[in-house]
Length: 157
Length: 421
Image (tube, rainbow over all chains, first blue to last red; front, top):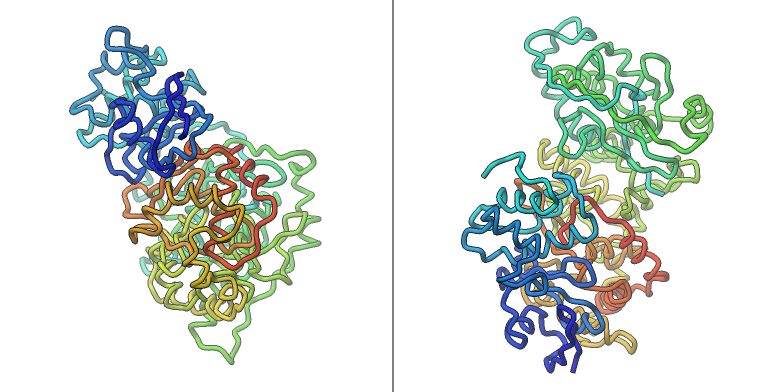
């Protein structure tokens, strides 16, 4: 048994310690925000926050997570009361199919948590590890800019 | 020590204004006649072999326009603009000025140049080659840009000190051909010791930042990475051959050794764009040194080691983390480097493997390249150290690294501008 702290709640998990966190989130905890994309830590659809840093949950074994704080997109806000960052994504309509968006939001949240006023360059550099196959990157960047209080963008999508 | 090359020809004092000026057909003031095409082409190859672009181009900036920061133990230097802009670049330099900078480390106005600009190597380059590089640089697009001022700790901002440094450490000798070796070997040595300045990273340096000439290519430090030894102390588990070096140097990856990464990545990118004969010459020379190593092969993992699932008591946590996070690429598919072949695993220090695990390998813009996700968020410092110790024990016969935790904390204390985590 491993105890995982997800969005402030403790869960006792009975699974092989090498099981990827993503499987536990989706299959055991029914937290379906994080998505399985590539399974190789390369696309970012599964991104969550662990102790303040982004982590690819598809390649993070739960053995690494005892006693650590895990945040998923479900921990940010609800449909009725989205977090400011989620609201910014809604306002900028920064999704097409939406598959990458939970990962994108968590990636952006990790940046804002340690740097509430990032420059455009810092946003772009930080977000480059997230892939969107629909190509909504420009809207995603605008959403992050909006969330830091700089609506409008160097480039309209 | 974090010395890495950088040309500091003109102390910048103009602020960081940048503007584009198209040169058109006008010659820069330093040039009286347009050099012929063949000379410019030759200069392009030589400048690429010399990696001028690597230091003289800022992240996202115009090629050769300078402004790239270089952290040294003495403070931060910024590379200069070597485009032919008359005001902020080298447009007013004559070929004699350029030769003097390259071979003596002195700017046209008499200022001493910081030896981060590797004139200790360039002093050994034939004038004909230096003149070709001059012809190439003076016919590039003109960019008006001045680097930020250098930020060196006192007293290192005082340039006359460099003259004293030169008296002590700068005694270049011409590269004399060894008649007992092939033409290719001699060409390779000329490039390695001269323009390509491999020793700037791969040689140990003394406390004053000078290469320890008696220790050749015995390994050094570069921008937070370890540049492994290229001589007979090479730790590569598979002995380097000229063929594997050609593959590695031209593609940035050789499956018998691993991926080029950190400060080596732009070097292998450049070597993909020069004639193969030059890369083969370099490979033949380096293989004649590193290929003699008995150190590396003696560190290679045994079959018994590879068959063990848990190599030794004390590695249970590392083994578990490896199984959960690493094995799917590195063992069960062939997409990852097989770690028993990796120089990072047998290296004298754990720096490189810790950097790769922590921040991954970012793919190179616009090119097919090796990539690996970073595990900065996945693992704690303590878990990273356990994993590194396990990999060393399981995939090599090398003795355990001391101070893995110290190195992990150092790497985690720095955050690269761009990472794959």
